[in-house]
Length: 569
Figure 1: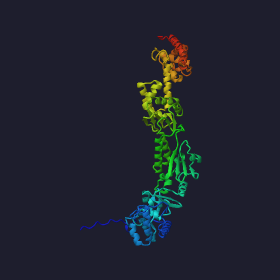
Figure 2: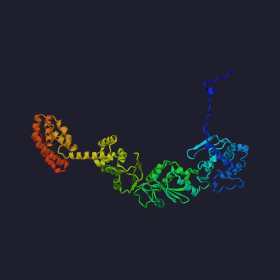
Figure 3: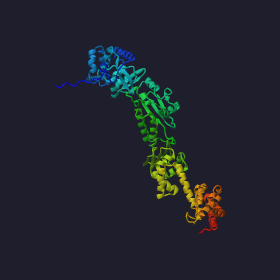
Figure 4: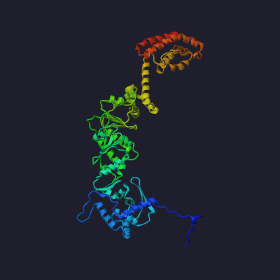
């Protein structure tokens, strides 16, 4: 038979102690040892010390003498364990017995631990919701049960002993000065309600009517509406709580959790009536909110009571539930407008007049309803309602532009087909602010229409008259200053016309050296005629005097004569 391989050793191994660390086990401090010893001694003296006060009705025995009430069964078993608390052999068997009441199993292990004299090594139970504590582990009882029984004065941990009972539909309420069992009916004591509300994560003022910052007694008592809305909670004993949106948003820890962790099961939805008090601005006083929206609000609040919804998201979720249930008129932000009040709706949106006109154009083109979400998603609706989650025109137009840009361009600016598509694609790429974009587009179209008043189309005239026409058009479209550099770049007769243009606008001071003597001489002779042409252009194009077209033709004819240009009237 082959020999086993020699054990590999390293220098110093003989002097090194081997340490084995067991997870959840630690050496207890003197304070922990004293506290556990005190608790266990009290438990050994009175094994029923960890029990809640029985306020609820226990179930009755059946015809065969059996009791189906879980608490009644547990109390019967605890009584048996209590009588055997000094019998270590019996406790040892009971604490490992897999059948029978689970609470009694953990009690047997705790009583056996109490009979010992070594409390130096302890286990640690940790729960993020109910807290943590040290305990001595004995037997096959649940860790939470052992920790709860041995720390019976811990107002939260002691409830974990009764988790199976809670699953079976039984209720427990614990606070600093009491611990009660109310049977199959959740009936919290007045002292418990006062305690949990006093120690909740949201500071509350008042007695029977309690309210957070941002509310007052009259608002809560009379269920008055506020701009941002508020949550109303009413306990069966008449205590009513009002919590403002601002207070919910400002919480660092869950309000529901701070209340629910003092009851088992932690369901405060079973002990309070809840309601979100809010309606959109502009909603008629005598008009009920849609049932669909109120049902959805109730679902949201119930999820919040079950600690599924975050405090900070509750108000917005309730608001959206109501707004999205409205199937008529205009819903913009948190406001509602009648379908006949589009003008008022647009007036209250943030944006330029051009942006508002564009949105009105889109609305007029709709066959059914539309919902533009804050994230830019556009949803078409069967109902005749217009919903804009944003109150600013720009994000709404950004969302609508790809689909409705052609409607805006055609109906407001008479731009169609390929030209419209080019503008739509250009704006999609540039992502320019719609206020500036539409304003520039409007100005551009206005100038284009004005230039159409000129008796000759661009390119119809011969040089240098065509250059004079070009300078006039450029000055009207972009201002005289933009034409200075263009006037300098003319060639031959156009150079003379450029010099004349600079003289008309008194821009020759530093530019004489750019022009040869011949151009300056010719251009100087043309100044009176060109000045007459510009005066007529200002009158016709900028001052809207349509009769000035006659003067413009005469001035152009004069300019043709003095420059020796061919001219067809």
